[in-house]
Amino acid sequence: MTYIITNLCIGHLDQSCIAECPVNCITTDSNRAYINTEECVDCGACEPVCPVDAIYYEDDLPINLKNEIDININFFKE
Ligand code: SF4
Image 1 (spheres, rainbow, N blue to C red):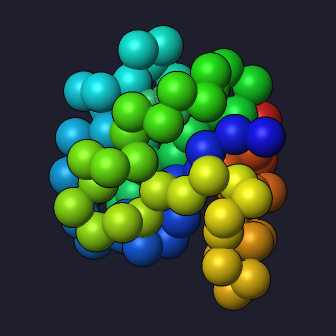
Image 2 (tube, rainbow, N blue to C red):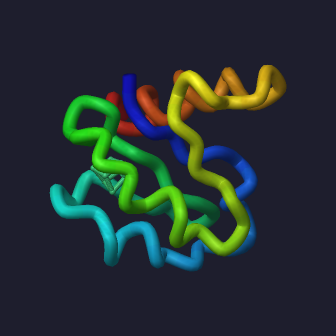
């Protein structure tokens, strides 16, 4: 299990999460941020600092955002 950044980040890119992450596993493109699930240590530090509540523990993702797991994983495969 890991933390996931969802599409709620789009248009915000606040990047507070990046400042909090102790292992630098959060990356952005021009639209939003993504968590490298291979490197995330599940510390939870990023989740409370997101101003738009875009970050979820994988198990807590709403059903309509479950596809964001693959979106985060695939971002780092490219
Ligand atoms: Fe980084 Fe911790 Fe958030 Fe994982 S849970 S992305 S390690 S701050």
